[in-house]
Amino acid sequence: MEKVTVIIPIYNVEKYVRQAIESAINQTYQNIEIILVDDGSTDSSRAICDEYKLKDHRIKVVHKENGGLSDARNAGLENSTGEYLMFLDSDDFLEIDAVENMYKEIFQKDADYVIGNYINATEEGQKWEKPVFDLEKYKPFKLNINDYKNSFFIMNSSVCNKIFRKKFIDELGIKFVVGLPAEDAIFTTYCFIHSKNVYYTPCIVFNYRQRRGGSISSSCSMKYFEGINKAYRIIYENFRDNNYLGYYRYFYAKSMNYTIYKFIDSVLLDNQERRKILSDMLWFYNLTNELEVPPCQESVEKIINNVMKGNIDIALEYCSILKEARTYMSMQEKEKMSKPDAEMYAKLALLDEKYK
Image (cartoon, rainbow, N blue to C red; front, side, top):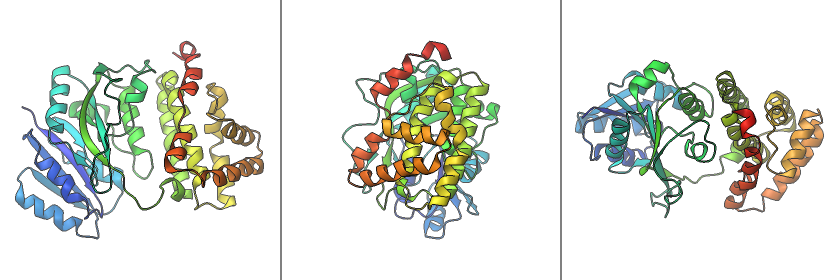
């Protein structure tokens, strides 16, 4: 049995990190290497890492200056010696047979990487009733970048529900882009573009903890939008340069709506910053015409159309109206509003052949 490296980036998560580490230690598959990357923690996380290193010879600890999630993951990659790679965020936790199930799949299929199912959990660690991917709808299958019906929905951005063949990652020469949001999306979409054998298994890999403490969307700063603008350009150019704009149209539809509502909900932006963000992301919104991807709702369409016409102030007025309306919605209602629905994807499908 070959070695599987589990990389856990850690920064100031003393409340959760023990459960994450324990979930890796107690795996039914024993031939693992656990790399704990302490990214300059200022709480007791650093000491906890050193404590577990003394308890289990399979644990390797890397202490480094704070450089962010991508930098920590890259440090884990540089220190890995396993034939396969898995990632676990330090506030989440693995299923006890996660490594065993994922190793069996990637070994038997001789895959570049394998995607598994996962399940949400409360902040206290109580699992939700159903996993993220419907067990009845999605059976085991091989993904295809020209399959927008099933593969698109399974090929989510996270690296934490996947196992990668290290040789595949090394041959690509890919690392996580430091200093940008959407680092997972950049990494996983690049892998998908350049892969030949990718499979899905409904086995549940990990538990994704839903932490409280304020809405992520409402706390997006100017720095975030500057970063997401750069990240989305990298992703778009990767798909464009490799002639996979058919798949990208679906990615774009999802990310366009998601990003505009983050922009609308943010409480950290003043009007000057909002104008600059919309102007800087004009290239991104222009893709709605270039790729024939209509916005998900009429209200979003009015915002984007006015941005493309240079009517930034009018676009911001529509944003203000939507922001006020969304303050009366539940989290579930806002989340649903931020995602394309079946009707939207059906419209995209009408032009699938044109973009293949």
